[in-house]
Length: 578
Figure 1 (tube, one colour):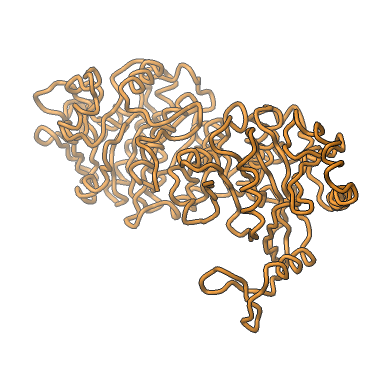
Figure 2: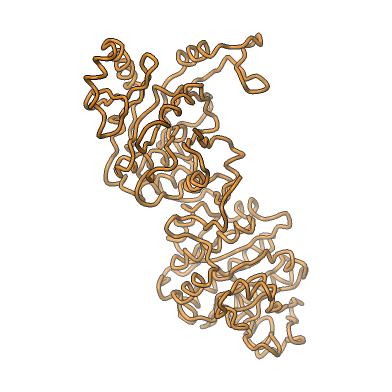
């Protein structure tokens, strides 16, 4: 028998998808567990102490001829009078005398008490059977409440597995320090717990039905033998399962002494009053979903050592493309990115995906989700929000790489872009002609550019923002007209401009490295990735195409799509291994 036990923090850090503060995602952990060839998967809080009867219970369950899901609640103990030996193989008293396992178990049982908590529950299941439940597992944050209760509730309603409670069979304990925060959802103020409760209400059947955990079949060990007890029918069975519990009741009571079995059952019943499971209020949104972070605090925590931020801006109609962009950032191990949400829907969505997001309070309120495409009035209003946000971040002392969500990154371009130095705005060229100058009038693409936080840049960006505010066009013409001059009067050579008042240099990036959507017909190539690789592309912009749907379709069909919408997870490019 092989079983995968997820309990060490160093294991958790190997997952591909995390909250930006470091908390792993529960759905990513579950997906990771499926990549292993173990017979049984077990999720255990890293602070939980397991005793040897855990392994013997797994050995018994390994022989069951049905798919099952186990849940067990550890007891809490305020003080543990023993310590582990240096090699971690046994427990020692203060006198360094070895503690016998039976003595340890008796003391722990006597000094501990039931205190069920979603974050501390132990779950285990046979790995190669049916799914645990139907539907999609939400992007819960691991250890932040709701996720275990949600899985159990959905497993019960899906009827795909035999679900039972092994709290009386598996000896497990955790230290509950007096300073610990309350485990009740009502006592939590953390947005992480609030986010999980919102997800529990949004997904699955939990909002419409309350799971009756008190009716779960109990696994017990009586006189050295494992038995299943059904508290509803008051039946006992050796095999368990919703179709098997009670079928062997008479046979068991004839072959076992009735008094012993009854005593084991009474032990479980007597402790149920102290340990009361309930999903009430666990799976329902309880508070408004908001980050406790201001833009300034997000920037200080996310910027790299050079105080550089990668910024993207998105509205709700582009949320899936935003997620594909985020997945690409994570694949490239780029962590200094931040998202500006143009509407409340995008803000809430990004929070539930664990992304570093802030809301633009000055963004237009009448954004049309389906019609905000290039050239539209909505598009013109939205683009002007980007330059305002960049200017705000520059004034806070951070360098900015602005990248639209439809820019696909092959490699991290920041090292190259930052090499241009201060007082330079390095921007993508929107010129589509293969030959000739790339700094022609209004060919500066304001969807991908890099700027340093310096006086010249701030002054130049203020000119752009002021001009865009009074323009009936998008912000892109304002960039060119204010920096390169109307008609290109400030052009220098074929790939630069010089803004005379602020002394800012505008550098148009090499299109082989930073191609736009019309350059070299790259998006029409049979293998876009291979074609870009031969040219040495660092990024490619999915522009020069009309309409969000066409843009989305082109990127998905090209293979430059990193997000699985059905699972709410990043796609894995290769088989996961540790």
